[in-house]
Image (tube, rainbow, N blue to C red; front, side):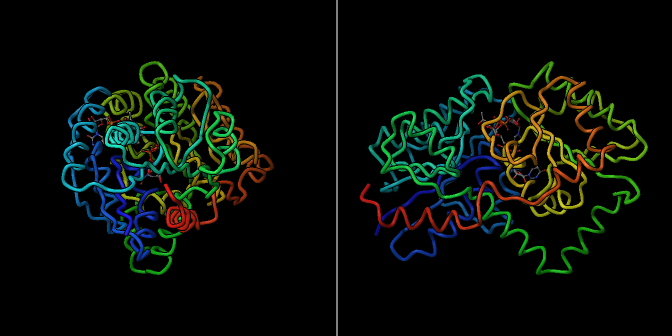
Length: 374
Ligand code: UD1
Ligand code: UDP
């Protein structure tokens, strides 16, 4: 039996790894364990609960406002302890966080194979997203198997001379997770009713703009621009803004300072995944710098304004359902205003497309690992 250890630490990794853990567990050829670094704590635990994930190892590394070096050192050292206790044949990591980079490096130090889920996304700029572009490059260099979500991400890896036989286009597991969540929601009327109550503050006479943001390269000036753009759009009487705030204190400070107390801006705590899905579905448009949200929203037919200067997810931009607006207040606000005022423009964007997957990515990944001689 192959021993597989899934390692993850933040909210998006947990969401995107949940279907992979589920598919691995369904495979009789594998013995599977889960290690969480808990780079995130509350935001990670929310996901664990919803997808019924249980950790076999919990490094519990989160500390308030810690540095990137703190995270890296704690994960590297923590994984050493895990490998001393249980040495897997392969670890699986997902994405581009510091957990991914450090866990992959720890595995390399122990000559353990690494399967990289969501491999090959690139902007070509190591400072945007920062530090994620470099994290993903490093993980890519350490990986034995590369699970690229799209053809384009696979091509990026080929350009970097990664062996073709080790690169697989699987789709993004976020779509598997999204379909699982939709099935849970739609199969449970009580749950939907409870969300109707929980979100009773939503004003159906106004169009809902859902906002999220947390990118480090936007901290400081960038976040002030983002908040000012939201403030300008929120000054219209025909919209309501809901902003589940990321727990990073560098995000909360400017958001509270600029948007706190505005009549039609509701600042709320991070939502569990099902609640977030409910509110995505209710929204008219989404303004975000999040990677995962850029991938989910096209599937739900929701136009997205990406508040970043670069994106490693060009597929939905090319398909016309996502706008890369940059980080200037004027550009972000006017992109939103256009979608609010120009019905033709809105309708052209609000089409459900799935450039990131078909919901079967996790199964493909498991089949590949099963037959691989890594
Ligand atoms: C991290 C990832 C980023 C990913 C994002 C997803 C890195 C360097 N960053 O960014 O790639 O897109 O997660 O959300 O890997 N905090 C809490 N509770 C939580 C989570 C965070 O209090 O549940 C606070 C803590 O003060 C923590 C800080 O946020 O120190 C920053 O967390 P960290 O994981 O270092 O970075 P993120 O900005 O969350
Ligand atoms: N999400 C969530 N609750 C929220 C905000 C986002 O469950 O309040 C989900 C979202 O649907 C997506 C993921 O979290 O799947 C994105 O996480 P985040 O934006 O923190 O990280 P990124 O994707 O940018 O790395």
